[in-house]
Image (cartoon, rainbow, N blue to C red; front, side):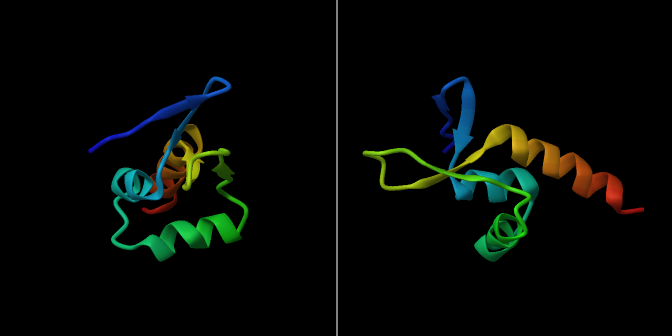
Length: 69
């Protein structure tokens, strides 16, 4: 199920949704990009989850697709 949270004009999604958008098979792939500082992780007080910018995920997806070939 698709969940998008808007916060300060930014659309935030959970890691599961990011994995689905990027076509990854495991969570470690997302964590790799977070560690490389290519994705920012957001934590909203009161929500017990870390979220990712949908805009950054879509940007990573287009960069990932154009780097192959």
